Length: 263
Image (cartoon, rainbow, N blue to C red; front, side, top):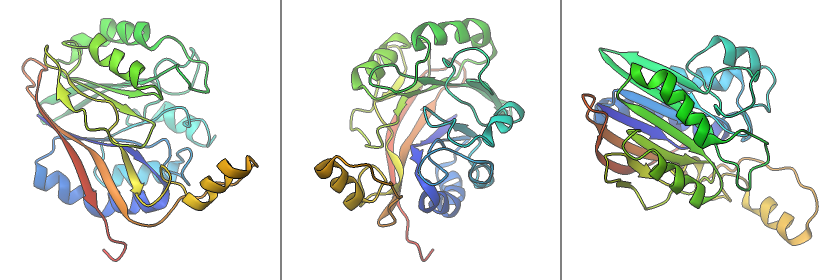
């Protein structure tokens, strides 16, 4: 089973890149399951119905998210009605939507789980470690393949989750920081791990936003309105081969694909 996971999709430039590049990537890489983090798909912060549908129409089958999932209120009922868009599972009980989904296609299946870290993160969420234990206890019997998006700021917290799920998850990958790390590896018990899969969006930016505005904010410490940058758009992520019979990862490699606006 081959899985492609794309990093945080930053606004319209990244959505256009996903639209243009993902169908061909799925065919070229022989991808069975494509996943993307959509929490910044609408204007660089939040996801709305239009942007979610745009990504799903491009061939992405499961959308994960993070701390910005609540920015667009129109997405609340969409979360309840569409299993393909999930939010961090460790939000308190009563939050719209689910924190996991069971994907199935062509005889293959995968349990996809979304978690949010607590270190340096703005939202007050429940313990992601105990939360994932409970999900695996209830849903783990339904799929040998388990994929976890750990949406977190701290490298240490992401690594801790990777080791915590070593042998219990097929893939544990980080999102949120928008900078692709070079530490992809297969942990000893068969879990593919990377601290951050990176970002789908404008590379000539500060984590996706116009660099001049961000720099001015650091210098002046005054409030500023962020805008998604436009230049040098790339898709970043990983491709992972998983043995669906035992859930162990066999190979992980980083993905970085440039996109030209003229395409």
